[in-house]
Image 1 (cartoon, one colour):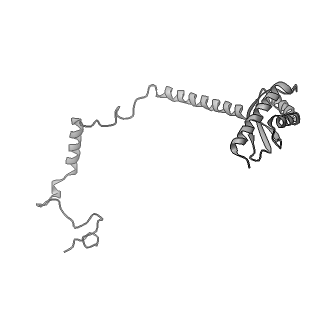
Image 2 (image 1 turned 180 degrees about the vertical axis):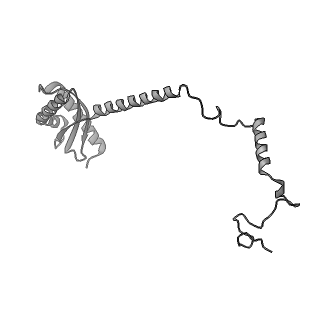
Length: 186
């Protein structure tokens, strides 16, 4: 196993070498407009995966994949010569789906914008279902009067004995003082 920083440096160097080779040395007419997007290498530095994108149709992408596959040996020998590692890693080219993912995300965002605009159009002439301000403002005289009325409705004078509220002998759990339901202790 190799240090991760060393593996990342080697992957970056391989990416630079492959990009330069595709730009300057590989003269295959099937090679389209290729961009090397990323390179990853295994921890033992034996296998490198080069990710690329191609601008064009599906046919041009297939031709570019064939051109990269045929130039793999030349590119690997150049990578070995310029990096100076003991074992030159084998190279695998993988089509990066970055462009398709970006286009898909753009489509989803456009759909979301269209739905937001539709909701905004529907809400344009709408009015609130309740009060315009459903929250009570603290300290307003109207709220205090409403609270007093609510308390007055809940209180009944028949609930009072001479000494205070009537006691039916039940505790908070609904049991009597002796533990039996609803019976006061004697």
